Length: 443
Image 1 (cartoon, one colour):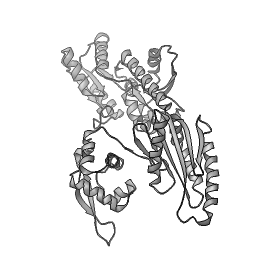
Image 2 (cartoon, rainbow, N blue to C red):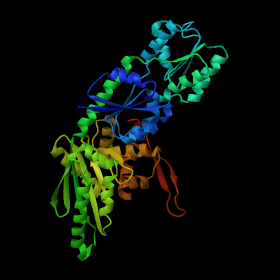
Image 3 (spheres, helix red, strand yellow):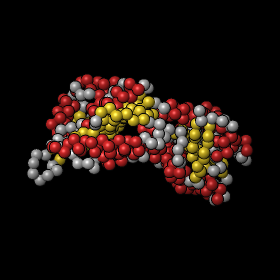
Image 4 (cartoon, rainbow, N blue to C red):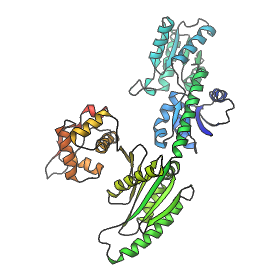
């Protein structure tokens, strides 16, 4: 099994990665280099296809994290941890005149320095340390390369430090241009090898998942009041849908079978279906067929370890697609994760949960696990823990009355609370504004 790894790295660090891959015939490495780690996100647009991303450190991963998640590529980074600090300090002590006396250091987390100094029983003074912990933990110290350069330069110009250690390639290059004695933190080969092994494991998992069985069901739905032209409309829609589906699976190993006048079933792999979704091909099919008047098309896709499981999930997906009363498609994964509709900004929720807090909330409020998970996803999507019953009705695609019943259940069981009201129109009753209690958001 060949694992295709795309390495995002500075040009200087690429030889270290290649050295630790050795001549492994099962790894195909392609490198994409930057001068400034901020460029790492843009480099992802140059990658045609890969099984896993390998970032040369936490910093390039930090800048590319959002786009990595959008592309749904598995990714790992080579860590700069306590082992890196220990090796770098030891090297400085042996090879820099004056050893560890009066040095400035930038690291992902200042706590790494404290822990190493404690274990080596040395006093980290006079050391000048700055960190940028947001790259390894949410809400940490902000990273600004120019601020890091200024930090080292000012301590050196005041004579407080005589040598700088940096964990950022770009900072190292700039410090050298300023003729400030410096060195990059030394990343141990072990860290590189461990990251490569992790990347291989992620790549194998992705390939294994991509080979999962996938089933798709496409159904033509006749709108109410279609009249005497209904049969003609259905025939036209069937022909167009078949043509579109044949075009859809042309570049994959998927196959199509006709189940009846108004339904087709697709058999393929998870990888092929995910590719169709990623490139908007499914949405294109829906759009083309839906140009016929009074006809909608709903599609449901399911993943599973067996054909039976995949087909069952596809039928669950069809159920969610039909509830919208318009042409669209939904997907249900083998983990009962519902994604859709695929022709808009897809929402995701789970039909099952092992989270005890969610199960308890669902049981107490009489709501389904899927509903509670949808509500959690709603808050995360909006990044705003305030909403009205109308907001929920639109998001959950249910009636205003159903939304109000759900809201009442959640209020009765202290899951949400009223925090105010809004008056969207000059006339009419004001709407209550609700908020989820914080214990729910932390689940």
